[in-house]
Image (cartoon, rainbow over all chains, first blue to last red; front, top):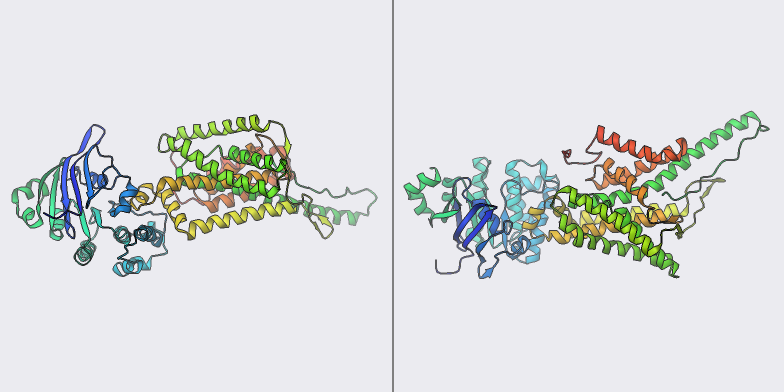
Length: 240
Length: 322
């Protein structure tokens, strides 16, 4: 961990009213790696992603994209700087068509002039989206919606991709397909992925490194192999 | 409240006419009256449609009913009048009023609405009602509270078709044409341009839009500006060839609002259809039952829509729980 991480969160604190959701969280996502953030419901995983993206105000700490400080920047600025988030569940704009949803991602990508993934490539990756390109997005199934938001995030051509529970409610085959796509993006395009998952077993199977959150604090952080081999940790926090 | 249109009256049948000719003449006059009622409804409906569209644009993006829309349109129409009376052409006044509408909409959103957005809905209602009253008072102070006539760029005498004078004037044609052009331009903007897509995305889901780098605040300002411009257009068209006074848009606010609710508040197409339906219905009521019943008819339509189909004719979203 000598070179600069693609994304670094230092001592971040955030609260919802009197409830502290993040209590001095420090994590780093190495460039060209998949880093998993694990923990039970309410551990602060989603809040962490939302604060990184500028959707939840933080009271102290820092967010760094490479050397660039993004602490307390607006969500739009953070997105334009190169952090794309795939939010859990409701990331599809259902009133727009599939293609319009994707075009929104493409617009941001175009603005940043670093397009690695064109619309046609996303359609090649997820052919079902191509079939439904003119349909309203509300007609899509859960799995198709997840493919749509991931495809849209790829069109943003982000440096760091934040994924909140991408496997939630999806059939294992589709999860495997999506994880396969992520692995390829990381290995071939050097993208950095920060992956929040409740399903620790499947997350550690794809991740290179991981952090475990409990009640807003980091309780462990190591390579995925070390975390998966730690029986005490698995039993106490990861539930497998 | 409504621009007077040339409603031709057929020559009264006299007792000396042969019976057969009397019946034919009556049929012809019945047809002519119906045609005139329909034409009048069409040109009024186009203007209500524009006004309803302005309300819908703002409702879609900020979930606020802009009760000040009429006052804003009135105010910019007075700006046009001031220019025209100072010797400029109608078209200079027309263009400046539309630009003033854009600017006024943007300013209102930035300075006033931004502070109540996301707060309790009643706050926004009270604020727009306050603006409605304040702008009328300001117009009365600046421009006077008396009736003043507003010019029209085209004739106000109905066309003669086959020797019959119909209730469609060159100005009516201009009004309908102007509304159609604006609507097509808006459709093109929302459908085919990047900024239109960003505006729609901001209207439907602010959080996701921000995550995609859309400057949501700027899109909302632009939405208010465009809506206020369309509202200004309806103010100019209502005023053309008629009288203006600070409250001359009040009835249009009511009819335009009912039209928007009829169309579903969320749907631009619904606003246009709602506007035309309102125009036709009110024209029929006015032509056959008496003009004093028009406001009552508008209220009856509103109540019926809310009872029978509260989500309107075209809305895709679920009924709002009140």
